[in-house]
Length: 388
Ligand SMILES: Cc1cc2nc3c(=O)[nH]c(=O)nc-3n(C[C@H](O)[C@H](O)[C@H](O)COP(=O)(O)OP(=O)(O)OC[C@H]3O[C@@H](n4cnc5c(N)ncnc54)[C@H](O)[C@@H]3O)c2cc1C
Image (cartoon, rainbow, N blue to C red; front, top):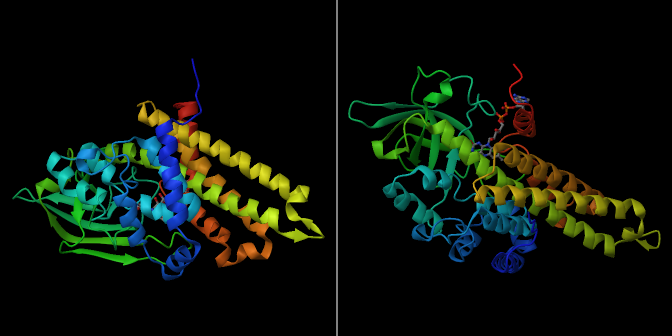
């Protein structure tokens, strides 16, 4: 058995190209302007799409680069390292498109994936409801999709905390389609919904961080879609969603690694430059030990995220490694950004010094795609099996 922790020459070239792009384009002033204006980075997104970064792991026939998840993880990490939440908003601009890639018809793939890969359309993926977040299984969803006599579907309900819906052209929506199914999740289906359809309304939440992508309520009132908007098979939606979330969780892990590394970089530079009591603060053991701990946590999180992506690309990633990568990296991002604020002292609390933003952006990673409690439940279930 061989274990090779190195990236290939091609992967190193991708990493270098993304790093150079992010260093040149994600300037401090530009990100501050986006943060204060709560703006999605449209210009940056277009450039990143044109360079093939956003759809790096989509097939070339739909406008992607044909690489795998590990390469996407490398792009995500570098974007988040330089831009924190800006990287998150860029990489989630095609949120839900992997569902279409995996389960869509050829017509659906051409219609939705090509514009998303080419920087002409943004998308959402809607699972959460006001009364159902972690638990999508115990009760039927309140968002329903009912087949009418002429074969079309009528969708009603509200999804909450949906990333991108105000700026997106289309998205996927998990709906209840079979109301007798037991357990109820066996009666869920995914519908593709276009933003400009009659009955679709979106309202935006104000939030703590991640201010470069809108988080919205998506209200669907008698929204009529055709049979062609059903994704894959009816009543298979829950299974598609769980499989999709496993993949996205690895990507969230990469965001955590990038955000943690970005906060660490800034704390390291500050420790070399700042003086107190006639010495560089990095000379105080209390500070240098913080840096040592931060660097070790980041390295551990990175290894886990890369391992999960590697296993995913080889078809062997189970829910355990995906949950480990997501939960651990998100936690490390929060802890490292917290310590970075501490190292910068009062300067760390100020908006223009970036680390407080890394902290606020990091916190959202612990909540999206399953809270840390849910991920520990998944990991523990894998370890213990069924006990009763
Ligand atoms: C910035 C942001 C963007 C988001 N984007 C999207 C999106 O694009 N699409 C989408 O569908 N959703 C999105 N979400 C929603 C997110 O996935 C949910 O918030 C998350 O799944 C948790 O659901 P909830 O908020 O309803 O919390 P709840 O499920 O109500 O949980 C509340 C608390 O109870 C705990 N808890 C619940 N069940 C258990 C249990 N069995 N064991 C132990 N503890 C438990 C939770 O861990 C949590 O601490 C987003 C959220 C945020 C913050």
